[in-house]
Length: 546
Image 1: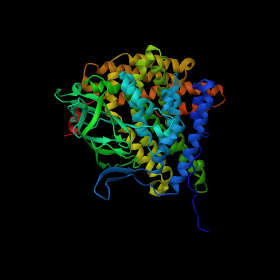
Image 2 (image 1 turned 120 degrees about the vertical axis):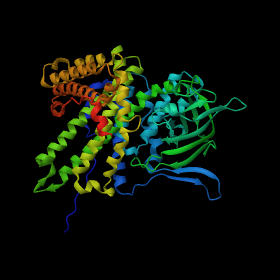
Image 3 (image 1 turned 45 degrees about the vertical axis):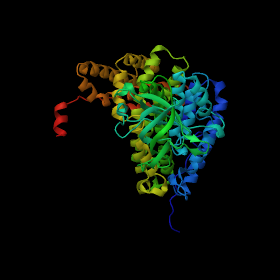
Image 4 (image 1 turned 90 degrees about the vertical axis):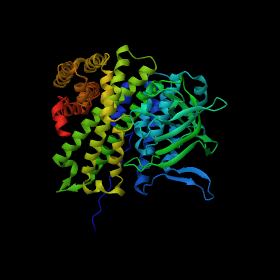
């Protein structure tokens, strides 16, 4: 009989995930466990089902039909099965609504759900993140009329009343420099604001609402003259005529996610607040959407490693399973250590976000969140690409074959380093955060996380690296160009130091529970090095770019 290789099977993403289970046990009060764990188990069931379903069918992209058979403009988008199921899964398991519940643990509970749902959702989590950001921005705006109108839909537990919200910021001329926005807001004869312009990148065009940046007519140039507007996209079952879908993007990855280029031709809009400083009004949603990005990146790592480990037990080569081959085992363990560090940092950010939002955070934690959020996002975004690429190698040639479902992991991972700010954009944002007292807040928190383990090898390495980062900042403080040129290395260094200290905290707690694995992850992670500082060399940069 011809040989047939067993395909990798997905372990139950909740029952088999010791990191998430330990986090829930350590960080959450016992009385909050029951409802959360029921939802996590249900989302794990869905993830397993979705993996099996995907392996038995051909992936497909959403389809845009712009005109019906009789010449009427319809801009109808046919979605994949997972996207059709999205409103029901998101509301049934409170994927979004839980983050806006009472108490400092709300965000931690929300992002535990996001972590389990993300890969199975086929990036339906992207518009969920946009909707979460919109809900946060609306709350911060104090615009009670819009809060009353939109929030019950955004946070609904009933799929029939649930709305998605997009973010329409990016334009052809702008990108990260949103000050170049060319969308104009004009008032009609009835005083209704209407938007006119083109948005180059809309990740939630199938939603019922959106937040959009536009320049009120007659205002000056630049970022300060932009205002933030709320729009609704649907008139009953039909798309409003002021919203025209030009095309769906043909992307490297996230194929199931319908990303569109759109024209706004008089779409009704309502300002969230003052008719200026719209980017400032966007700021409250950044901590939220960047945390979604980091959690989703970690979820992709978890999926890639889970499948690679399962396959290593199923695949035999040179007389024994791959898991027993020393170099293969070493590679998997290296991946696991990096992943556990990323998990620890990301979920600390999630917990901090909830504490800050509910007024439970100490003053230094408020400052710390401002720094850790871009650090977690930029580091996990790059790490997800590396982990998913390494995981594909673990499958050999099968990792390069489309109908195994494995190449999608790597293609999709590339989006994390781009969405919600590239690595360089976030490195500069981290540098701005360091202009305050966030470095002191980070150092204070690391001491707290290390607790009584300050004299171990790991603790000494973390402390020495933080001291080196402080020296680097002092050394280059007089030159903004040198600070910016080296900011990426500084950001990775600070992220790795924070992650290592959090691994140490988890390792100490787990050791008391009789589990030595987190401490082993810390040792392995430390051995990979924490210091990524670089000495900027403007002369060689100029020569290499000549």
